[in-house]
Image (tube, rainbow, N blue to C red; front, top):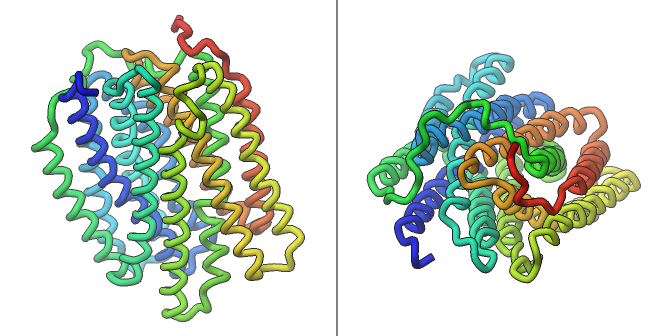
Length: 421
């Protein structure tokens, strides 16, 4: 790292900007979820609020990979931050007197813009790791793990921040405050960004974003099912279940439940991020070959399957919401988060190991398009399964999706450096 001081400085600047973005991203998600649930939105309507966010992410990741390859990584980073500021400002214009369909449409559009912003910033940050990280001694895996783990820890703080801001400032002032702070950070990043990131390559064709690598494609498929399995309970099902258990319907009860739900979501994501950052040590990555790590992807996905499968059985045999059931769910989902974090961190390393430096933004964009597809699938199913079959169907669906992630991970081969035809 000491041989690349400029590159390291650029990496630190990009990471800091990404942290600031993810803080607002987590806070906004919690603000929207809890605010509109108290306004009478059904689980399916709540899921609709995040659908365009995920759809936008699918297209954005494909386009962002090409844009960054053509115009440089800083362009996509600045665009992501600026668009998030704009989305927050627009959201302050929501009129509480609008009919529910109008509110849903308005928030969906704003969330779509926020989804574009998130994936522009994410693709920039993840691609920077491949270009700037040292390759010796497992350096790539360590840098990937630190970026991904710290990002999720910051997003976890964002969940808590969003719940706290909603309880203290209210929806409009909370979004306005976040917009102002993020705008200040954007200006600082533009003024202080050091050199070290590539400026772009003229003549890059958009068709190049579609990978010809079977490893990249199978890993992307596994990513769809892995993140679908998380979001099927994370987005709507569990937060709304906890709200039903914790709130008595009064304003004070709502405020207390906001803090408790926000705290759980924050702790879950922070611990998830901490385990992600520790994944290289957990996997003993510095002592293992790339082939061993490829095979580990299926083993860890299989271990993850056991958690939602067991929780599904527990919920089915319970007699409705009870204290012991809530405690069991909390503990079980924390275990899910720890195993999921190792899976996620391993995937994030493998996509960078499989790609080439000249294709990094496009392969990373394609891979995170798959990530967004999984989140979209999980988001839609989260509201739908909770409304149709309650918590058992939510958790059972998560188990099925993890099983599919394990099967597709098994298709990865040891040819990490396969040639592109």
